[in-house]
Image (cartoon, rainbow over all chains, first blue to last red; front, side):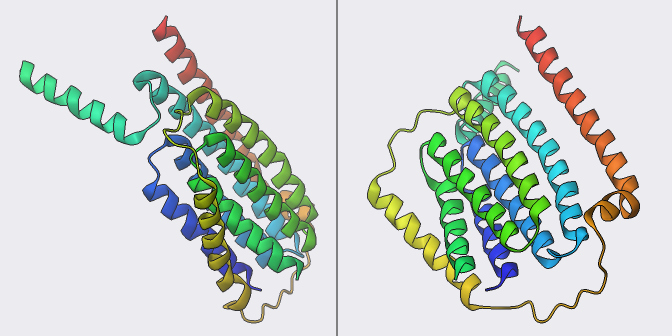
Amino acid sequence: MDFVILSLVMLAIGIYGLLTNRQLLKVFISVELIATAATLNFVMLAASQGFGQAFLILAFSTDTAVSGVILALLVIVSKKYGTSDIGKIIQMLQDKGESEDEVQ
Amino acid sequence: MIFEILAVGLIISAILALFLDEVVYSVAALAGTFFFVAFIYVLNGALYAAIFQFAVGVGTLSILFLSGEMLGDKPVRKTSPKRTGVLVGIGMVLSLPAIFLSVSGSTTTTSDISIADALWNVRGLDVILQAIVILTVALGIGIVLYEKRKGGQ
């Protein structure tokens, strides 16, 4: 049983989800999985000492702050465009850009 | 044996969290992921880490449930049991390397330092600076959302 490989697999799953999912909430879940994989590595390499757990607390605090920023941006984008699908948002932005070019 | 079961459960719940179509089920699977990680911490003697994982996990998940209900687009199709089974199978296959392979080697740890010492004596400045950063971020988010609401009205 190797926790380094376990966290590596989790990291790979998170990165794959980050690259392939088009829904903003799923992207956020991918970021959470990547952060969990990193903290799993920290703790398991120094589980018996205080250092591993101290680093987990520091890393999780940062992760929570990042989550707050991401969720705030997600709420703003979803309210503005009426959807949380990245593909639809990009399409709307492209349509908006083309219509502005035609006006000019 | 219990670590292997936890590893399989961890990978399966991570895959389900990402690839189920319904957001609410995805968040439930993410809760499973946090639970398995916290259980692994407990079994390895990292009790503080497990408690922190639970606390942060509960907060994150409750916000995600609310956001998922507020913002989640209704899925065009529901996840079929067959697709769920395929995802579980992929998760079991992906957890095999973690069970049978090893890259760690022998790790010798010499320092025996408590978590309180590590936090306050060794990384004390980090903790204070991080608290300032988090307070600034929280304030910034509040201002952005307030300005957005004000602009909307």
